[in-house]
Image 1: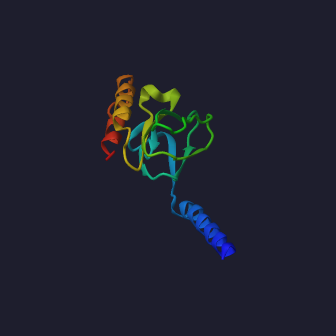
Image 2: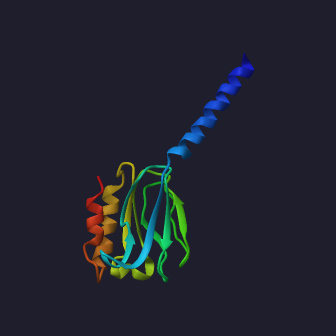
Image 3: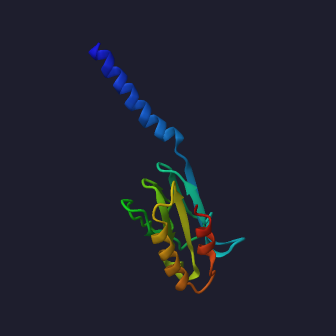
Length: 149
């Protein structure tokens, strides 16, 4: 009886871990010099995801990397290397605001919403700061923020 109980527990734990990976999604965000939205852009600029999903940033053109600016409490900040693919696992619900450091004045930034927008006020303030310092593509990040629900 005890052995059967341990096997059932093991099966439940295994199923829980497998279920999380089976139901998680993978998102790709390209770092581009230009597209239909304009110059210096992430495509897509807004991603709706869930906890456990992964995101890979793909440098489709040279001279780009990605850095987090505002993230949910408890989440880990991220910073990629120049011209290298970079993958993160989304571990906390909330709004992640990120940008390409060499192109920050061109508003090369984006938003990932993971589950509920628990830190929306903090993210809004960060978006306002980024938009204030923007010389080109003004309003782009505000448009992405409007999609957060």
